[in-house]
Amino acid sequence: MRTIPALAAALALALSFAVPAAAQNAEIGGDFVLKTVDGEPFGSENLKDRPYALFFGFTHCPEVCPMALAEITFSLQSLGEDADLLTPVFVTVDPERDTGERLKDYLGSFDERIVGLRGSEDEIAAVARAFRATYRKVPTSGGDYTVDHTAIIYLIDDTGAFFDKIDYREPYEAQLEKYRRLIDAHKAKDG
Ligand code: NI
Image (tube, rainbow, N blue to C red):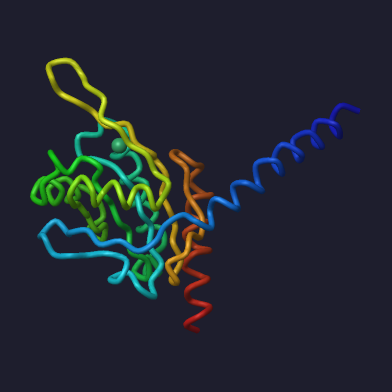
């Protein structure tokens, strides 16, 4: 007898979150131009007609970024040749320490298809705003700092529109399923 009210309550809760989330999602993403690890301009124009997956982070991140990048790497490998239809993008929120060279070295530990991007503080702040992502410097002992940041993988479709998001440590099969749906939608259009 307790099952049905509990289910109804869960559904009501899910619906109450679903509506505003959908309204917000329509506004996630947009045009941007940053720079690659080699200093070349790279942005949404380069990603035109391709789905992409974008993650904000920084190379000194102790846990979240290495984990997310390892999961992205594993997903790309699991997707097989379909992974080539998708561009994974890592945008640093710490351009002060993440020079192009540093970013390049760091990403060398992960799938080579991941595109590292950086820019000025203002350029990065603008991209983060477009994606409704937040980050902030937090001082640590010894005059150092870490950066708290949104840990979402944004999935953008081949029209540049928000498609879905992957939350930090989301169950692995669910992550793969989202990548597959994104790529399948792209293939269906081209097919
Ligand atoms: Ni991080």
